[in-house]
Structure formats: C-alpha cells, structure tokens
Length: 388
Ligand code: HEC
Ligand code: HEC
Image (cartoon, rainbow, N blue to C red; front, side):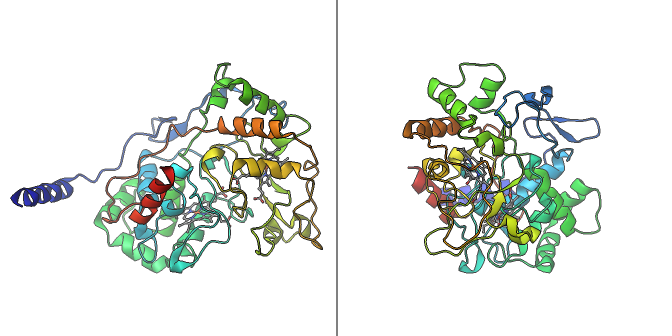
C-alpha cells in the first residue's frame, strides 16, 4: 500500500514540476527561418512542370500552400486540437472525429458529436490541408480559420459558445501564457488566435512521402508491378481518375458532380448547390484528396461505401446510375462508363494503397493544460478493438 502512495506522490510531483513549454522547433518537413517561421520543404518544390498534370504526370509542381507559422503557434494548435476543453461539455476534441490513426478521419460514415447528435456528412482527412483552398464537402468555407468556428459552435459537433470557450481558455494559466507567447499579446485570448493556432497545426500535417512519391522521385523499385499497372489504369483516358484526383495532391481542388448515392433511406444531399446557389452544382462535392485514402474508410461525403474497392467500382457502374429517379443532375463529363474489368479495379485499389504516408504523424500530447484526456477512453478503446 505504502508503495502506491509513494508512486502517486511522485506522479503528482512530476506533473506540477513539469515545465509547460511550447516547442521551439518546426515539425519535420519544415525549416526554421531566421525570423522564427516554419517553411515547408519538399522535393516537389524542385518540379516546375505543369504539363501532363491531368494525365497523371509525375514530376509536376505543387499548387500554392500556406506556411510561415511559428513553431509556438503550431505546437499551441496541436494542444488545442487534442483538448476537449474546447467543447461545450468537455468531452470532445477535434481529434475525436479526426483521429491521427485513422488518417485524421474517424472510421465512421457519420461522426458522433455532442448532444448524442450525428454530423450529416463524413469526417474528411486533414492531411495536406495546407494546399486546400475550400473546406467542407460542399466547399462552403474559404479558409481553415473560417472552417474552425464551424465545429466549435455547431450543436451536433462541439456545441460550445464563443463566451464559454474564451472563458475556459482565459481561466487556464498555461493557455494564457502560451497564447501570449505564440501571438505576442497579453490582452486575453481571442477567437481569431484560436482559429489561427488550429490552422497553424493543421497546415503542418504534410504527407508527401508515400511509396508513390519515392517512385516519382526516381526510385523505380518503390512500387511493385501491380501498383504500377494500377497507376497506369488510374491515369488512363479510360478511367480518367487523375483528371480530378490530380497528382501530386490527388485533387484538383475543384468541385465536381459525380452522382454518388446516399445511404439507404437518406434524403439527397445537394452539396455545393446550396453553397453557390447554383442548380448545376446539385450533388456537387469537393474533389477529395486520395492521399492516405487506405486509412479513411468509409468513403464519399456520406460514408456510403465501406471499402476502397466499392468506392472505385462506383465509377464503372455507369454514368449517373445512382442518381435518384426524377432528380436532374449535371454529371461531370469525365464521369463516363470506363467498363473497368475486375482486375483493373483491383489494380487501382493496389495503387491507392501506395499513397499512404504517415511518417510525420504528430504526437498526441501526453498531458494537456486542461488536465483532460486528449481522446476519451471510449474512443481509444473502439479504435483498439477495430485494429485487433
Ligand atoms: C463531431 C465530429 C467532429 C468534430 C468534433 C470536429 N470535426 Fe472537423 N469535420 C467533421 C465533419 C463531419 C466534417 C465534414 C462536414 C461537411 O463537409 O459538411 C468536418 C470537416 C472538417 C474540415 C474540412 C476539411 C476539408 O478538407 O474540407 C476541417 C479542416 C476540420 N473538420 C477541422 C476540425 C477542427 C479544427 C476541429 C476542432 C475545432 C474539428 N474539425 C472538430 C467532424 C468533426
Ligand atoms: C469528375 C471528377 C472525378 C473523377 C474523374 C473521379 N473522381 Fe473520385 N471523386 C470525385 C468527387 C467529387 C468525389 C466526392 C464525391 C462524394 O463525396 O459524393 C470523389 C470521391 C472519390 C473517392 C472517395 C474519397 C473519400 O475521401 O471518401 C475515391 C476513393 C475516388 N473518388 C476514387 C476515384 C477513382 C479511382 C477514379 C477513377 C476511376 C475517380 N475517383 C475519378 C471526383 C472525381
């Protein structure tokens, strides 16, 4: 018994003596500049060609990206991202629905939010958000800052209020000190600073070193025969995948109407039609990146497809085959009837598996300033159970 007390005493000692420091180094794949900013460095920055992009050209340039945050802003964002203190009932963090081990998605068709409510769409990956120009499936947010306030205050997500959120952070001495350190002001934490720190963290999630990338950079043994065969079907004029899911990011950052089905019994999600008030975008969604796609099942805005194979097979079952009767949808002209064979579908799936790269997965903070658990036990148990 006495030993237990001693351990408890030591543990509490350690916690109180812990120095609450933000990191002063950049995450991997960023270099620290003289004025204390993290600049992205990737081999793709050596490629300037734009030719053959839609045809699946390999050594093509990256679109513009966001970087230039300080190490302290990024590390503050990492703590906020995992801290349930940000939610109304202090049960949910951003990571509850964007789990690092699930490609920053959550393995569910629809996510479980506050008040026993579910989200109406599937949780997307956050990898490579530094390159994304429109956020949410229906492209309704123009920046990560604008996006962040969505989940924080949505009743079916984190269900907080701006007043309550600011009060709980301002009452926390560690966060107060950290925000002052990261933003150089000490007049109290603001919503803009919260959004900015979350953005800093999310733009640090870089995944550009999959086996596919190694192949691109010249290691021709990085992909096996099946994966190369798959890549060739993927970028062929028949399958046309790369015209929308364009390398190197495997998205062209556009919106396309492709006519995916809703789950059984669910009403049609008109997607980007609402955002842009444009009937021709009925059923239009953002072209999602396919990087780390093997980790983010189930697939599509509705999570309708449980496996990657089903998602790929969708494209060969006929143009508009899943559009409900009587609904007029202007399906994109690149969605056709490629009549892929079973073998070709399998090869594409093989290729998509070669787009996984989680080398730079950030660490979940061991202790949070709020003292809360980053991702609650139930969620962790569910993940462990599934992985067994
Ligand atoms: C209850 C689950 C849940 C929580 C909690 C949650 N999200 Fe999400 N997130 C989603 C869902 C679902 C979507 C897609 C919604 C849509 O498109 O309409 C989404 C979309 C996003 C997107 C858009 C990605 C893209 O490429 O379009 C970002 C970025 C994001 N979330 C970041 C966050 C951050 C930061 C937090 C914490 C402040 C957070 N999320 C909390 C479920 C959640
Ligand atoms: C006209 C543009 C376009 C073409 C061509 C296209 N896609 Fe897509 N893809 C999309 C859009 C838009 C979505 C999201 C649709 C939705 O959620 O309803 C999507 C979703 C996906 C998803 C699910 C992603 C996720 O995160 O859930 C996979 C996998 C996929 N596409 C693979 C392919 C493959 C393989 C091909 C070639 C056979 C292909 N796509 C061709 C536009 C396209």
